[in-house]
Image 1 (cartoon, rainbow, N blue to C red):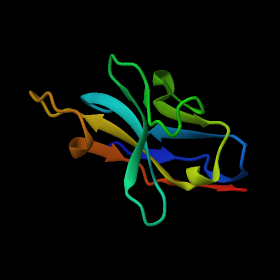
Image 2: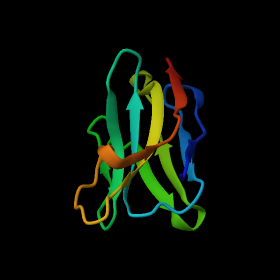
Image 3: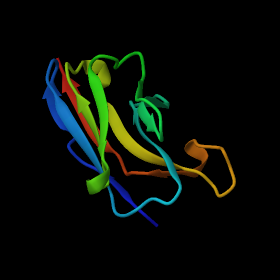
Length: 124
């Protein structure tokens, strides 16, 4: 089973930047998208950004213009560049790989491979 490992989290002041890598341990069979989610204390896990195969990056309204998702396929690594960070960005950030079952068109969280998460704390 391929594993995803996030890193790059930490503490930063509001207005600062962080870049989160998410490294895959190998090739992900039938991968159809790569995503970043985050979960703040006491809240649900929310989608931050995603890249689906053949599609353009999408962002949550709360991070548009500040966050950028990218991937380096040669390195099997997904990135999330976070600029102009706000205190409300404080959360555990998770990357995930959506995979598609053979013969299925579904591409979503049901068949996703998740990383363990990395904490991002933004202070005022």
